[in-house]
Image (cartoon, rainbow, N blue to C red; front, side):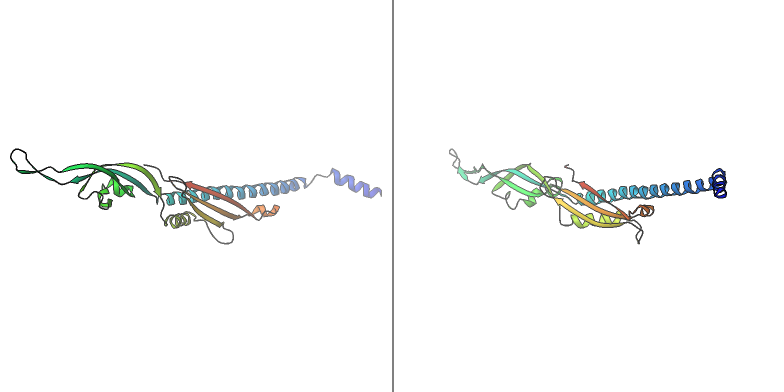
Length: 221
């Protein structure tokens, strides 16, 4: 019994090899924290890249906008008449014009205003015997064509150039919505990504998921 006690006292006083044990333990802890920092740093970078991709997608969709305009044009209707001069008795033109309902012209802002082609879209409202004055804008709005969603999706795919494979991030879902309830419609792109972890697997976290949303609307010029 004395020999056993003496052995334990000797082992307790003997510190040889303790530095190696402490170094191995510290190295393991540092390696674990480095791995966690690597996973979270990679996740932070991918979140930023995903945000850039959805922002680009929504902006590309909003750029498909077609500004529309409603023009109101004052009109007069001409009445052609010939009158006889009371002195000479010779006939002369005494035609006259009276105001009538304004012309309403609806179309793309670029065609009607910038190109000045509103008369081509008047549909006979300014043809004789009617005469039109200077148009003025009564209403402005914007529409997004059917190509909006495909363009937004293609833009997202172009920007989502992450490495694939089993260890690479995966886009789980991508939705593109157009809100037509506003005067200037908005395009919203939402994407969800899954990133496989490396060192977080040691604490039972197999993957990280995050969602990012980007919204853009055409600017009224």
